Image 1 (cartoon, rainbow, N blue to C red):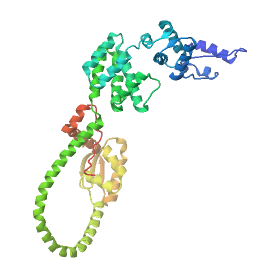
Image 2 (cartoon, rainbow, N blue to C red):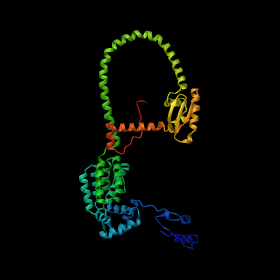
Image 3 (cartoon, one colour):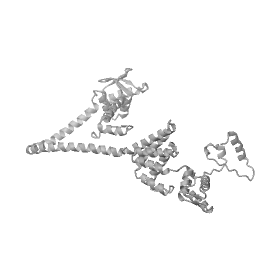
Image 4 (cartoon, rainbow, N blue to C red):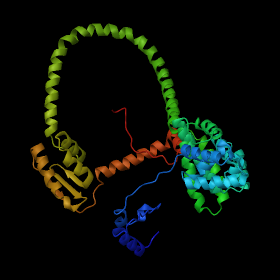
Length: 428
């Protein structure tokens, strides 16, 4: 890359170009070019050539130069060039000189250092089937052929990616027929397992870079792959546990229902006789009782909205009933209770700047209860805030859930799992 002084000299040339001169500036690091240069040039982004176009181009050259070839050998050259026509031509020239104008797939694989790629596929299949001892033997065989552990993990990452891709798009023209057939068989294991192995491999790839012994770190990565492939899918595991709990509860319910049915049969006759005698009397008094209850309920609701709270919790409920949700939220988050008496409350504010809360609470209670309330501030510690108490209770419930044998089994298989919230569906 040019220095700043060189870029300044180039800028002067671009601002005052000589006649009949066209300047072409090619780079792979466009971000390092100053904006003053880019603004004075026409910018063209050159894209990589796809494998099909590049393969046809190389085959055409081989036909014109009377070079015989195998289709898979051309595919390997195109893949190794990564979309660069210049690199593909250079590799083709090397292969032609090495093979004597008769390009063979095996010689090309040896030239590119890709010999034994099928061994990597075999290693991946063994890891998927949890055959750890066989997988470690294949891993050692690949090492003996001169392949570095980092390259082995990189190849396994590529296989995992290709299998996941085939699982979705079903076919890929960029792969040879033999490799695509084997990758398609691997893809039948399903995306959840393939993605899980990808995550293990990508983490192992980073660990190998800083490991004191790459071969040992690579073998540990293979062991983790075998172990990870045998882990159950989280959704299936949870469904299995829920089915077990449902069957246990159903068995208990059937036992209880069988015992209660026998008791109900013996008492039904007596109850029916007594009910017939009572219906005539109850129907006459039912309408009068209904009217009395409605009047009592209405009076109770009105009195509850205006009665004096007997505790701090009652006071918070009273605020919610009278639609003072903002004041309620401020109190449960920012207030430490010191003492609560009739018409007198002593509090400590979490933040001294929120003194307006005290005045609002006093005026609101006076408005609701029709009595004056003395709300004062103190520097004593007092109790924890309501939210802090709720968090402590929530943590205790989480520990109780983790101690449950059913959930303990889940955390055993998924140690990084966390309980985010707890809902009581029965109360709902």
